[in-house]
Image (cartoon, rainbow, N blue to C red; front, side, top):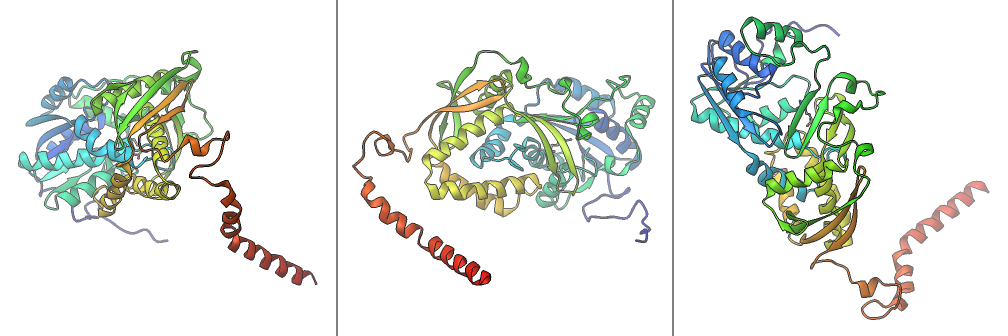
Length: 428
Ligand code: ARG
């Protein structure tokens, strides 16, 4: 196939900003190497002012004073930090719990849930601060660019976007050299092994890069910074109960907790017992297949409990049907379409089902496993007297069962006979 000639300035999307169109940029700033280099680079390259926004979604061990200070030193004219933990938990994580959200049955979507909120906040702050453009640090290979730019283009068609990392040819070493040349402080610049690429928030943590890209390389111990390795976990199991009201977790071990604290505590409990390690081969939305190491203790505990409670209060028909919608919900959110109306359509269904999801699930945490051991709900579609082996009678008449079986299996039996006859005819 012939190479297509393209100048670097060809606009591939209407929302992308050209040099000359930009006067004030809101930069989504983490304080890390990429976005610090961007902060300086945008000022020089676009001759634009830069305002930074840093969003707290509950990523542990972050010093926001340091991040703010660094942004000012690199020339930001204004700097904002927003604590969005509550909004993240309520408006993004709770709907994910109601939808038992696991992409590919394994990834609880913490990054995918965080990006639309981060981008929504970027839009709000950009408008407030009089910016014409939003800049972010995503590469051209990931899902995050899709989630962020789809959000901005949806919510704020008037704003433009720049994604310098996607365009510039700098690798890590060149970025470090650029930073050093411009007096940008870099931590870990002298480390022989580059660090893992980490993304984390309240709902989980991912590691990428280094040996993780070798599919036949089993995880090195040093990747696990959140969850205790199961072999190191306590020798004694621990019981934990999770209380739900209408699909929302509201208590742990009988203690009522606000949602952010509940998620944090659930995460700490599960992490201690090695629960929530996922070694995931993932189909990205941009076509790549990659491997991620996830540490998702809170999600492993709360999703397991929620799913079990839902099963207890749902009918066989609801329980057969909902996983299909759960899967669609997770896929949409993974794929960056948080603002797609189908997502809110699906939420309406999730909310309807979750009206009944009230009760308590007990789990036993032990060396990497969270196993459900007790279930209780006022809405349980369960009657021990009916299910018991010890007696019969009441609402359930066993005498009716053969009649049911005869009709239930009618079409299957007819089809079976037809195929038998056809096979016989073929033989003779
Ligand atoms: N693979 C996950 C996702 O696409 C997590 C990616 C986290 N890494 C990152 N640099 N954002 O949602």
